[in-house]
Length: 181
Image 1: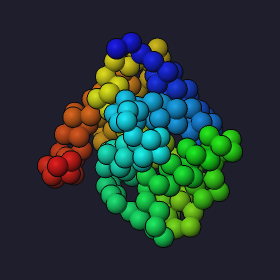
Image 2: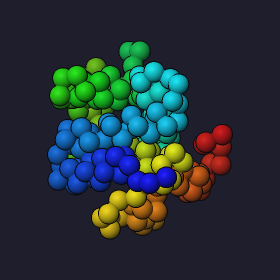
Image 3: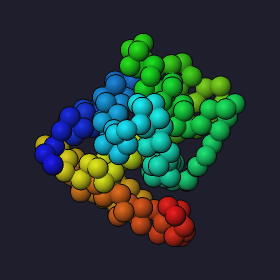
Image 4: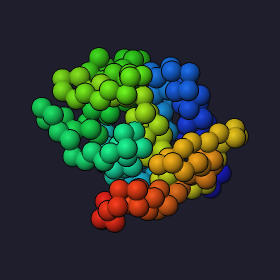
């Protein structure tokens, strides 16, 4: 597989996130998420496949974002995959901006309720969740960028399709081999 728009979008997302342009980062991120989710579940509708993909990757996303694992959070009938899809992806696709019920902050603060206020590290978690998907093993970026995950330095290009590797590192870090079972 040749690199696709997923690589270009992720590279642009990283650049914007590094400049603290979080909404713009997500504008670039969501097409990469959409295309990756479609590769995984081509027969599902867009909302279903995106929410299922985020649920599949939720342990990796939250571990990278917070150094904790948060799964199956549901506040007032809204789960993490619902919040990212409804307040992030759908709002950006249809309104051109994030729904006010999803905010990104620089303080490291995580609060969930009527508003899902996520630390900017969640953008990194989402990026990693997409990059490591086996469906993206043929992707690469031109830049020589890197990321530190759980104290390990990785080239961005090492992470494409490396889901099993990141799952094992996560299990080792949290001393729990059952996280992804």
